[in-house]
Image (cartoon, rainbow over all chains, first blue to last red; front, side, top):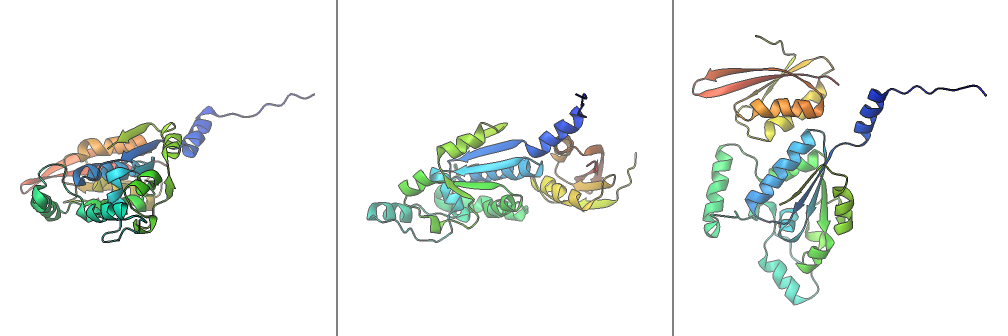
Length: 178
Length: 82
């Protein structure tokens, strides 16, 4: 039997592996505070620009960031409908974690950001989508908080739970909880 | 030291992460071997651009700083390597 040798270039193989398996980043966005969500999107867009594969998992108050502004809750029972009504959503309505002052502090911060041409949450989110960042909405907390799927923005890639997140996170190099 | 850039990208007035995002988009328009010049007035770019290059595999050629009125302008040069 003739001996066959296969050509193997370790450098090329490594490069190929890298191409196939890009570095991954996952972010759990639990908070619905404007500053925290902004930080999450800045990291997400930055990582995506660096060629990493980014997954954002929205849960609890973080879901407010991916709610369509003004969309009514379509929850079945009044308790959750009420909760969905009281808990306003939309990327532009998120309050600051500190110095919100009933909206005054947050609107001041937004004005300074606009003056300095800094992108807000809505713009950053748009950019993240553009760069291919994956959005996952947590189904359990969606139900818990009376938020129905049809009141979320378009472009949520998956509706899933903890296993989906963990499957992604175990292969990621950077996992953040915000 | 002067660098010859093939393409220039103006990110003046933009903050993190915009210069990096714009760079990652712009670099796609270049062919391998061409040099991209990114102008920014965000000091963070001094560290961010070399870090971006290291992660993405492009070559960081260098940085020029110049005082423009009261603000510093940072010119970074990136050679598309893949």
